[in-house]
Length: 113
Image 1 (cartoon, rainbow, N blue to C red):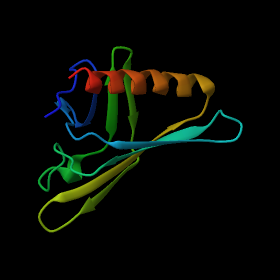
Image 2 (cartoon, rainbow, N blue to C red):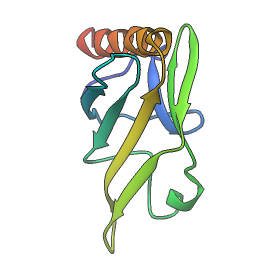
Image 3 (spheres, one colour):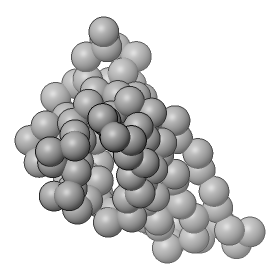
Image 4 (tube, rainbow, N blue to C red):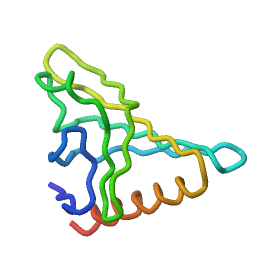
């Protein structure tokens, strides 16, 4: 099982790092300024049938601070949360560069463990 560096994490529930590694896809407008990152978690560990209604945001946490988004879609079956899709948007080159620093730190934290 892969451990996530405590200084770099993704959280849906404050204080609980999501252990499922997401599939991440990046999209940018032709001008390169605006874009989005779509995260898909296929076996989320921190979102359950008992707490999914209280999940309001996805938090991307690293040494620079916290990025967050409210764009979260859940796929739920009768007995578990099947999939979580969350979208983080940026509107400038500076926001994109900040996101990429988080993404690099997150990827490095996964590869170190």
